[in-house]
Image (cartoon, rainbow, N blue to C red; front, side, top):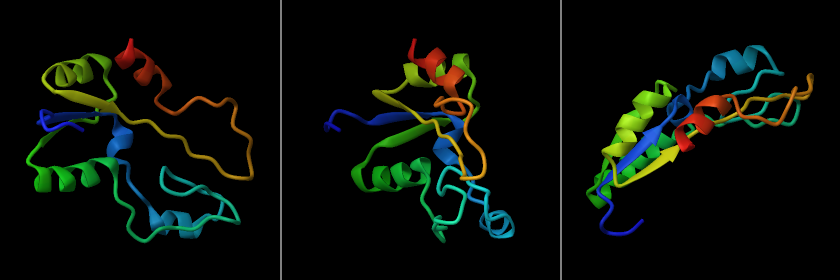
Length: 116
């Protein structure tokens, strides 16, 4: 990002998703936004969320992160209007026991609403 970018909006709950290691260890098929479920998965001990990673970089670079994790289109639009640039986060969980019904992300309606 350019030097003129001082306020960065992060929009969507997937920007700060939780990582339930204990739950994944109890259920081999369970996945989250950081690791897929199934026999080939690798569970990271401490993955960094988009929010945490960007906040750490902004501390070094002198920018500010404004975050709305509500998945509410109107609230996200208000936050984005007050930023120099905005990023929308979305994700999907999957595992090898069950086919996904489609290729949409979990927050599809939110992403489409915010970017329209």
